[in-house]
Image (cartoon, rainbow, N blue to C red; front, side, top):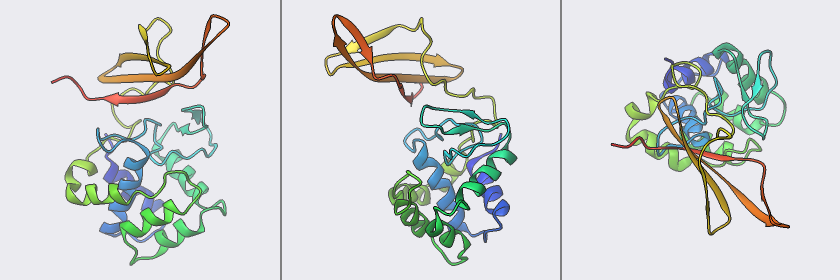
Length: 205
């Protein structure tokens, strides 16, 4: 199993960016901002904690937005590096290249960037308060946890709620997944939005 702290160390080394504790915290926080710090977990895309959409050999779409799952850590590291060097992320690169930059400055740079994560300063605060927990989060692709499917199985029990949402809760491996999407009724037919949202629910105690 590869932890987020190990992945962040590898990504910084691959990019030839100075390794500091602040950068380690910043990279781990960025990955958790793409996922869900409350669980905590990454987004589910294999070997792609930062949810880049960079094409690469062996890559497959993880979701409808084009975020990729990569076949190996090496391919994922190369994809993040390529994305950051495509000319659209100079502010983020400047922070990564600055040996004295802080985790907060990385969060702010990403927040001002087109990457899509937003400013994850609040995540940085939580990681700094309990680094051992968050550093140990598993990177999808590195362990036994299966990838999160884009949609529930066709035979999964589903239910509707008054706010026009269709829901399904399924178990995949050791994960409890909650899927939902908006729906409308037109000419007597129920029509969904086409794309499922998904979150990992806490395991029952």
